[in-house]
Image (cartoon, rainbow, N blue to C red):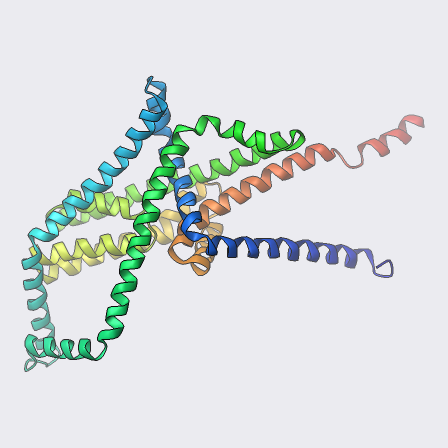
Length: 359
């Protein structure tokens, strides 16, 4: 190694460090994937705690018992989510016949437009039944796997809600518990790293809330102008769905278009689809990068890269966790850089000052 030039030796050392960190990170990701049924609820609970901690803190400041405050906070979340789902479900159930009738009319219009007037809905239904008979086993296995997936999601949601309750109730003990797990010399640094990481997660949740509010207001105004019924419930569904990347926007947008189709017909439904696509396009490319870059103190390009990387690694869950994880990592790196620089001190102050003093 002594035969190699100094720059080459430094490059080799940095390559070794990068490979070591990448290997540890890869092993960590694989462990998280293997234990995702336990890891995902914990991460989601941390996000929920970062979002709900201000409300819990306010309840505690007005002399509410910590356990009661945590329970009330979780109950408020269940009430908001359950109320929005109930309003939208009731609207869909009440207009389901109209939705089917509008779909039938739309199919007839499209068939007439493309010169398929001789094809009836009964023929289309027969063809669908034939396809279902051919691929019945595949469909059945898909339904079974879908039911299993729904069961897993519900189980993780319940576990995450319970963890949110405990995290909120015992949040005041987090620093002491963390210090007790770290040797005395590094306890202060580890606590500072944890605080900066959690601040990054809090910033992400604040930014997501702002983006969700913008989406809900814009889509609600658009549907209100189009005269679509149940805009309050649809707006609440859009607000909640904004916390679930891609899937939440798809579900809330589809529900809004279906309600518009049932009550106002195909033309208004297409206008509603245009409003939803426009707002969600602005959200993904303008609102979210700009807002998140302010709340988590990251450049919009870094936010977009983090979202893309998260989607490629872990899908929807990766998109949800990519930005807060990146913000937490940058916060930890900033703490380490600050502490290291302060402990190292000016590199040349001592040696350069002594000869001048002697002279």
